[in-house]
Length: 311
Image (cartoon, rainbow, N blue to C red; front, top):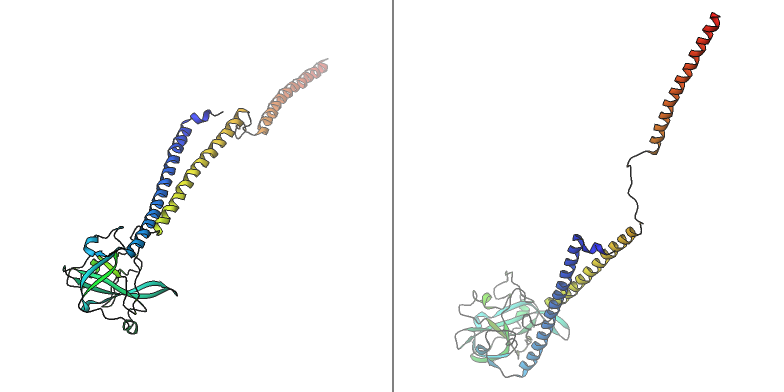
């Protein structure tokens, strides 16, 4: 009954199923592993952030380049603020007791003793960076040589929340905190990193450090989890379709063995009345022969009549 499994068609179906099912399971397991790695990395980053809040600050040069380990660490630098290049970073949100509020960062450049400038986010203020009433509340940076301490952060990119990479901002505003965006604004070299001060000068509010890129439970992490479910669903679908095809083929083979399949039509287009017409025609031909015999009878009658006349 199951000899159909040895046909070339079923050989192809079986080979596809045998290869597709393990492949789907492998891909689903791989995506699940990626999700678990992101969760573990996120937990490690939170633990490091908690330790960094109480750890002693280290010189910023010793923590560069910024990676998942050094991001959020307390860094310190010494120098003086460039008061001629204070910048405002608009459209930045900050959570407080009233929920998320729109505001702007206050960014100053610290000219260090090594010659490079370190971007320092001194704090956040609610309001609009384009409003004179809101910007008037920004306190002036400290004068003279100072030592700053804050959480180290990697340069922002186009995928960072709040970044305005399209440009078109008025003078004195900056859409993205990075060395690449500052290179055309200031005439000196800038660190490829920035820090957010732990203690902000009133009325500024300290900006909490953000998690390192790729270490948080972001959209990519949940995409991995979604892909995991999709691959396992694909594996189940392959099993379902193989079983359905197998059952249909087995039922057809069983019906054929029992003679339950419909017989093929014979004499396609044939009309059953056509044969009757042929027989009727044949009978008519026979009648013609009979008629011919009947014709012989009258002939004999004529001869008999002629004989009577001669008598």
